Image (tube, rainbow, N blue to C red; front, side, top):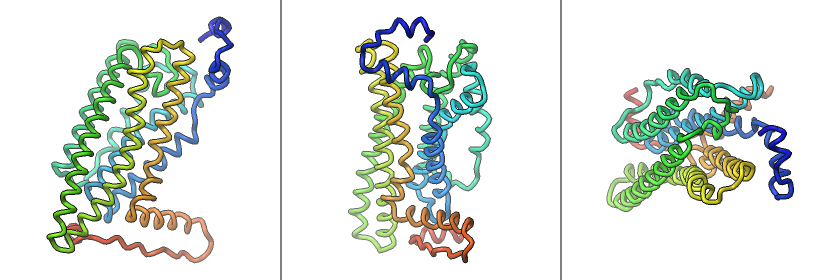
Length: 311
């Protein structure tokens, strides 16, 4: 928006001064790095030998996707610090493409159950990525700031948020179904051995943490999609008010996806032990006194012990 357009705005409405104050401030490095760090911690801890169950894998998958999400904001941060205000749209495709090779790994148990979740996630991600790349090829020189919301241009914006809405509703149905299965297994475990009870209780605890995380994350994404698809279009607000509404709910979304690690620390006893141990190890490296490592005992089922011995 140029100077003449700004001068022509009605300066009497309530959001104008706030918009003028914050429209050019750019990135929020504290929120970006905090969200990336906390989700990376969850991802790293989930691949420890004592936390490799199905629920742990799904927690790590959620953290991985949110780390990629925060990368979009990190790109905007880099553009703001080292480059001009506008970048070619296709650059936003080229940069994350270089990190695809880092996703290759060989230590994850590739089961049909976990593979199904990965394939579903990849399906939506690839489909949206191809549509975004198509628009970037059609308008390679279109100027944009590099923010995640700013690259949702032309017909890609309603398509993206429509898919987001559909994916969130499907995820809700999946987790309701999983909750029913976990409750049924917990009831059935009363007729089995103690080892089966222990395994079911462990999965139930991890699933409780997963439900809290997904509820916060899905709730934020779902609310953002509904606001952009159903609330803003009928209101026909001007550019300033649309910006204010989108940024407000965008900040809530990023705060919500930052809570993965704190929720795990509060809700999961196993993850809390690992957090305490790892942070103690880090703190001991910077202290001059004797290094005392707390002994962390994570109860394993017989099946998990056999799996570790086979490695």
